[in-house]
Image (cartoon, rainbow, N blue to C red):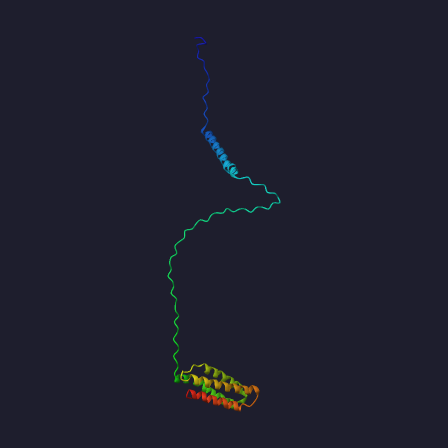
Length: 202
């Protein structure tokens, strides 16, 4: 067997395949690069394309006010008002007038002050130094008697008699202020008081 007939041995090295870890690493890096490129495109490139170039303001120019976009108001649906019942006006009931007092009730009401007036004028006679204070008290009682409503059958006569009695008390009080004699004024006040008591049957 000649040398030419011998088979020639060739050293063949098996082809080395990349490991799976390296393959996934390459895929992950490629995906990250694509994501970064897309993010840069959306954040920087696309907004600058749609934005209009703004004029450069000079240092002395006053800043223009920012224009607020006007939005047309959205029409709101109008609701049909619900009819409400009209409140009826409330009428205030007028209280009935107080019943007119009879003569006996009226006499019983005014008698205590009329009796005090008799004693008061007697005290003026006995205590001339305290006469002014007593007359002041009698004038207050006379005002209360004038404000007491009388029956219609006695109203006119009672009003005139009370006014006359009050005027005589005023005259008597004036004598103390002036320092003149009180005898005549005191007698006139007592006479007016007797007429007033006679109106109610006292």
